[in-house]
Amino acid sequence: MNRKELAQIIADKTSLPFNKANAALGEFLISVREAVKKGEEVRLVGFGTFKLGRRAERVGVNPQTKEKMKLPAVKVPKFKAGKSFKKLVN
Image (cartoon, rainbow, N blue to C red; front, side):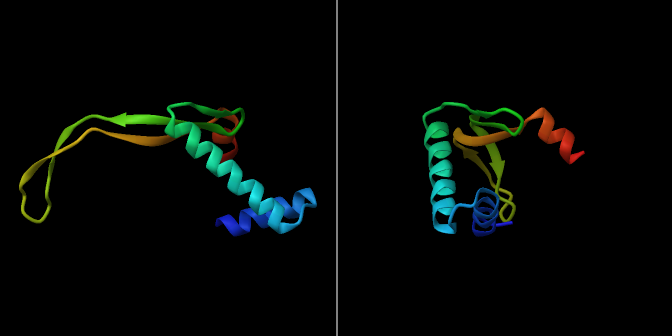
C-alpha cells in the first residue's frame, strides 16, 4: 500500500473528501518526523512508538576493495510495534 491508497482508505472510512484525507495524512507524517527529529517519542497506543536511535561509530569494510573504513556515528529513526499490533500480525 502506498500513501495515495492509504489516503483513499481514510477518505472512504471517514467520509472525508480525498484531498482532505490526504492533507491530514501529510500533516500526521510531518508531525511525526519533526517530533522524532527533536528527539521526542511519538507513542500511539496499540500501534507503536516512533523514536530516535543512535548508531555508534564503527569500522566497516568496502566490499569491492576490502579496505577498512571508519563509519561515523549517526542518528536513525526507529519504530517499535505495539503489543496489540504484534498480536494482530501473528
